[in-house]
Amino acid sequence: MKRKDFLAKSALLSVSVISATSVFGVISKNIKINKTIKLGVIGTGDRGSGLISILNDIEGIDVVAVCDILDFRLKNGLQKTNNKAKAYINYKDLLSDKEIDAVLIAAPFNTHAQIAMDAIDAGKHVYCEKTMAKGLKEIQALVSKVSNSKLTFQTGHQYHSSRLYKHIVKLIKSGEIGEVVSFECQWNRNGNWRRPVPDPALERAINWRMYKEYSGGLVAELCSHQIDFVSWVLGENPKKIMGTGGIDFWKDGRETYDNVHLLYEYPSGVKATFKCLTNNSLNDYQIKVQGSKGTIVIGAEEAWIYYEKNGKKEFNDVDGVSGATSQNYSIANGKRIDSSHLDPSKQALIDFRDAIINNHQPISNLYTGAHTAIAVQMSLDAMYNNTIEYWKEAYNF
Image 1 (cartoon, rainbow, N blue to C red):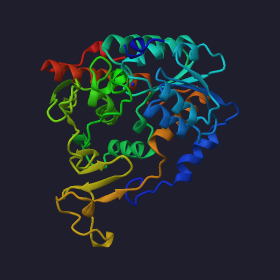
Image 2 (image 1 turned 60 degrees about the vertical axis):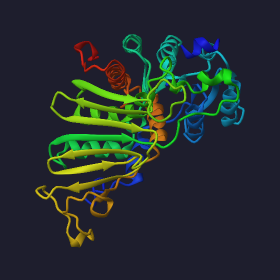
Image 3 (image 1 turned 135 degrees about the vertical axis):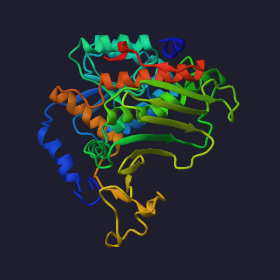
Image 4 (image 1 turned 60 degrees about the horizontal axis):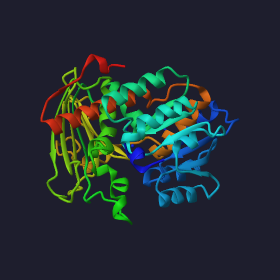
């Protein structure tokens, strides 16, 4: 396969604490693992190889094949399997392997749709890393292909599988913080996002995230997780999207923006902002959900709740929380939401296994993935073209 073809990826507070046993015991009790799913990983860069390490610890999944066009990436992925897997340069050769039941696609973003459609044609179940597909035509073609098959398709928005996040969504929908009025989402970093390049000829192959032909930049790679979460909470897709960004700090030949700022409006009237920086990492990853009775601030692994003074709950000295009713939102005067959970990526892969075994729809599926991918494309169009983008009826799969 030619390189150019490849490049053308508590329980709330102390109300009801959920233990790891109660959460994950139910899963293992309902799942009978009497068949090992033989998996091929397509794309063994940082993400693909990292997921192989996680897959090695999941019962019922065996990584039997790896694929990458870059030799050193392929060798790294192979080493993660203790050199037990078959190695392929051309993903189509991997797909023709009758031994393989399912594939995990962790290749560059612009290749997702074609690889996934070819995998479906080959009769393989698909775990496709986020963002699901690049471009509106590609998204629609993939939806058409998968929806007409009986195979399992899961999109790799791993926070959609997180038991902590599922618990938070349940709390919000139960009215714990009242009527939701706003989301403030960010994923800030301080670094140029570059990967080392052993040969200048491999610049675009390795640092594909920085080139528009292959990448959706920060929106597709980072914001997409939080865009997916907001739609999950609201049960809505955005009504309109505005945004801006630029290459204002890392002026090194990249094409995708080094900072992005997006504003979404949803049919219910709720507004959401999404921000990514690459030169300031304050608070790193965070989602702030504001409601009429309180606010939930969510990180990658934990979350905190703060009630409004007129909310149904207030903290007092008995709780051992000083100044809990002040409007100065900080860890010091909020309260941690306790919910036992696995690493989100591991939980997502376990969910993929279970969906195949039970033949049921994953929570992060073809349709949630497609709607988020469309929102990502609309965001890119809004920023690059200086337009306001509106959701169309044709996008409602």
